[in-house]
Amino acid sequence: MTTLIILLFIGAALLSIPIAHALVLAAVGGLFILDRVPVHLAVEQMLAQTQSFPLIAIPFFMMTGALMVSGRLGQSLVSLLSMMIGRIHGGPAQVGVLSSTIFGGVSGSAVADASAIGSMLIPWLKKLGYPAPFAAGTLAAAATIDILIPPSIPMIVYALVSGASIGALFIAGILPGLLMCGGFMAVCYVQGRRRGFPRDTTPFEWPAFWRLLAQAGPALAMPVLIIIFLRFGIATPTEVSVMSTLYALLASGIVYRDLSVAKLKAAAIEAGISTGVVLLIIMASSVVGWIVTYEQLPAAFTQFAKETLQSPWLIILAMNLIMLATGMFIDLPAAVLLLTPMFVPLASAVGMDTVQLGIMMIVNLSIGLYHPPIGTTLFITSSIAKVRIGDVVIELIPFYMVAIGLLLGFAYLPWLTIR
Image 1 (cartoon, one colour):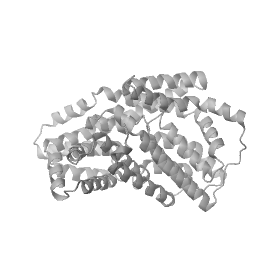
Image 2 (image 1 turned 90 degrees about the vertical axis):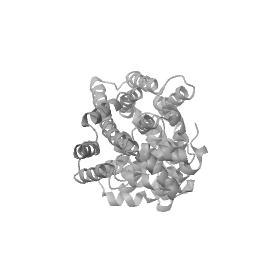
Image 3 (image 1 turned 180 degrees about the horizontal axis):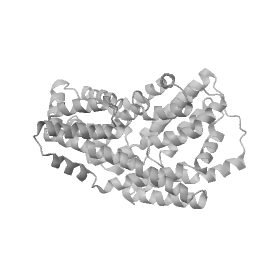
């Protein structure tokens, strides 16, 4: 049955049917054709998967991001970072990387980051004289740091399937996110120096610096507060998500004074739509995962890998290659839900911690967000910059090299995923 479902899914995907709908069609189609399992059980499984308390965190984190990223906050943060590092080689591009890293502590969505930060910074970089493909590539890659710095929507999805602690995953993602930020900033520096990219010549003024720092303070404080609450057990991830939304409302209404009924309505709609998409993917993937488990495929796959590859490092390498290939064709949440049931038993068999596997998986699959043919953030930033995808991909080659190098570190050096 699993082979039939895979073929149906590939066929639906080739017809440009959305991933969630393609998964539902493939799973239900397989059940109808083979008639081995009652279809109503599959429907019950879809609904049961959404009855999870931790999932409440998703819409609240989404709304927090929608409230905080827009308006004066984003402009103040970009101005502050530009004043601090705009003068060094590749500094304006590094502002984009740092902005995405900081906003990673607010929204937890790479797509939201690429849209919001890209809309602000790509026109600015082009105006300074940066090549449009490089500006688009930098922001497409940097946006994926968002899903490593807590909060992270993909980490919540992974925890739902694997049983790992959301709090442990959030803490474990901090160092990888910072390393990825440093790696991408190094690429911007090297490229800026080698190719003579222009630098921001705005003079540094201490009064303006302190004013911008005060304005950006709420954004800088939020990820710190989230980490403190999770690290010391003050609140659960779900409770933190609710508090973060309240924090965003107070910051937008009192500090920035740009909260309006229209902005609140737009944020609620955006959060609702984004959450609906994630939940639909979870529901669709749950059916496939249920069928795969019913046929004992994870156990068979684990046994096959252990007998064929034998060496743990080869098994980890094979898992990474499968993830890379999957991430290029399937959206990240769907890929997490499909691969986690397969890889958790295999990771345990080679002594890999579930949290380390989660970080490795999310870093790996995030590369697919700025790699064709799916490349969600790649398409978003290319559209904003109005350039061809192929030109952006060429500029992304150094970013791919850094990401894969760090990925291997996260895969084989457990201490990099601190918790």
